[in-house]
Image (cartoon, rainbow, N blue to C red; front, top):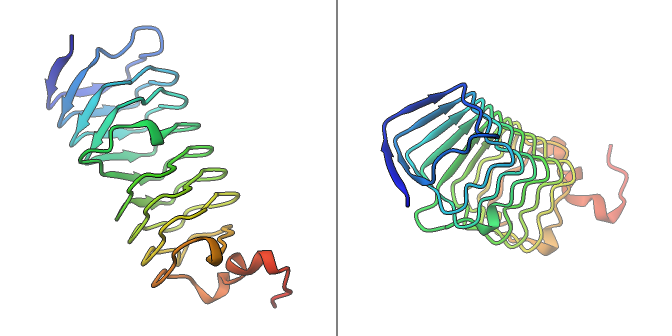
Length: 189
């Protein structure tokens, strides 16, 4: 049985021992909550925000995130590729997304501002017009991804192979072209 919850603030809650009830959460805010290792399968979050929360290693099978903003959250090792993608829209600000999988998702216009994305995977993802402003992309896998018109101007530590990704109109800084040419082992000075 699922519950419908609207416009509530959940603050300083620890859901690691007493789980968040399965439900549809609309317009809710979660602040400083610990949802690490939680099973959020089947949950629906619409117009919600997560602020300074820990969702590391949570299970997200068929979880819906519709217009959800994550700010200052720890989201280590999440597997977003198993979520419900209907009406999905995600934005991340100042989040730790290390080892997170976004494979084969349509992430058009998604925002990753000042995020730690080391070892994340975007294989086969559509990142058209995505914004990676000030984000650390060390060891991120972009394979067969659509990066057209994506913003990498201030992203850093990336290694993107233009031969294995669609990149027309993607924006890069002149100073960081090395991240597009690493496989050729060129000396750039």
